[in-house]
Each structure stands twice: as C-alpha cells, then as structure tokens.
Amino acid sequence: MALVVVFACGIFGPSRALRAATWAERLGYPADKPVVILHGSSMGECYEANIAGQQSLLAGQLHSASLLAPAPWFGEFAQWHAQHAEFDVGLDLTLNSEGETYRWGPVLSRGDVASLVDDEGQLWRSVVQVHANVKAVDVERELRAQIERALKAGIRPGHFTTHLGALVSRDDLSAIYLKLARHYWVPAVVVELTPQLIERFAELGFPLGDSLVQLIAEYPLPKIDDLRFLAPAESYESLRDDLLGQLASLAPCITQINLQPAVQSGALQKISDDWQQRVWEAQLLADPQLQEKFESGEIIATNWKEIMRRFEEGAAGEEGPAGEEGPAGEEGPANEPGEK
Image (cartoon, rainbow, N blue to C red):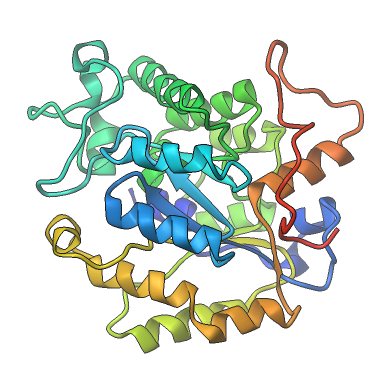
C-alpha cells in the first residue's frame, strides 16, 4: 500500500529538467515560473470545513476545492456553491469514511453496493480495506451516483480527485477513475508519469504495472506535473515554513498543493484527530507572507477551470465524449487566476 501513498502524494514529482515539456508549457503558461493550485479538500465533511473553504475561496486564498458527496454537510456546501458557481469546486470521489465515530455510508443503498461497506454499514475506514474488499462494479455504480448527486445539486465539477488515494490502490479502480473523467469530460487529478519517474518508483521498490502506466499514458485530459501535501506540524510557524519552503523550491511546472482547512470548534476536536493542523492550515491561507508570494508575481496561481479552458482552446479538433456537454463555453470569474 506504500505505492498508494507515493503516487497519490507526488512526493517524488519530476523536475522540469527531466521532461521534454511540462504541462505548464503545454497549456501556455510562462515557461519560467511555477504554476500553483492551492487546493482545499474535504468540503462537505463538516460545518467547520465548509466555512473555512468558503471564506478562503471568497478571499482568493484557495484556488480550488473538492467536495465529498456522501458526507453529512454536502448539502450546505452545495447550496453555497449555487450562489458562487464561478469557483472551481470538484468532487473528491469517496470510498472511505475514516473517522473513529463520525462516519458516513455510500450515496446508494448499502444493499446495492454491499462490498463498499463494513459491518457498521459505513464506507471502509482504510484504503487497505478498500483494496481488499471492494468490487469494481460496486465502485463504479457508487461513484456515478456521487457525480449525479452533485449534478442534480447544480454543481458542474471542475475536477475529480480520489479521497485518500483509494482509487489508485488497484489498477481496476484507477481505470474506473479515468473512465469517469473521460465520460463526464471532467479532468481527474493525475500526475504525469514520465519514464524517469517510473524508473525512480522501481528503484524505490514500488514498480508501476504496465497496465497502470498505459492507463495514464492514454488518458486524454490534462494532468499536473506534481502533487504535494503539508506534513504534520508541531507549530503554526513550522507549518508556515514548510509551505513557504516548498513554494520557494518549486520547478516551473504545475503543482497542486493540498490542504484541509477548517475553523476551530469543540465539535471539530471531537471528529478530527488532526483538528489543530486543519485550523492552522486555514490560518495559513490568510497569512500575509503566503499572500505576498503570489502578489509578487514569482508564482502564478491557477485552478482546474482555467486549466481545462486552456486545454480545450489548445486542443483544436478534439471533442468531448459523445452525448456529453463539456464546459468549453463557460466563462470563469472576473478574477480568474493565471496569466493569459
């Protein structure tokens, strides 16, 4: 299962020197500057996450966010998004409910996707349990239901992500992830697998199967060059230094940095073991030192709506799947990030 962690986190993301062209270059971003998506995950999990995400999006501090369709506070965030559809909100396709006591089940009836739930009727806690127990047919059925729930709520997802990396734990699940991205013409968060990166995985003892490499190579929608997370911190200052250090060392390519912001409350402390880190991450998004990095012009901010717009404008003659209406004609917000 270490492969899931490495692939999902992009810890060993390739440098620009190892590739012919980064996705930043392919999509027309300046070739000499890092392009960054500050992404907030776990919207819909709880009220505290929703408020932090909404405030950070409105302030321009988060560039992108993803929503858990099966989670209890999905409806509240969906109602907010109906009034703020200009923001890039994606779906965190979900096969896990990892909390100790605060949990959720699938969108579909438990009897219809029996392999996805434990003896409490909730989604499996760990990715290891997902890997060992789920049936691909149940996974695809449930994920389609999650997407349809979002669409019925008025959310046209800007992107798909995989909650806890569960959909890259098996090749058949990865195939479903990319199949749904193609079908709905919504980009999945996928890191480009260069030959050098594949070789590095093998040297580290995590060989990537030919089928997975082929799936990623044949996937037609835009990818990113690197995907990063913030390590657990012992203080706010060390967390801030971690993020600022990562930003200072980025290569000129597209990097998504995932955060999980939330506002502090007694309830959050009960439902989330890492509540302090999440509160610090919400505070970090508003930190003047972080904002200065982006205001200086050293780093370009973007989001998945902007990435998809650039991709479709540059992919002359390419069309979405038959019968699917893509977002090519949609306009972004007046303050859409990214240089044009």
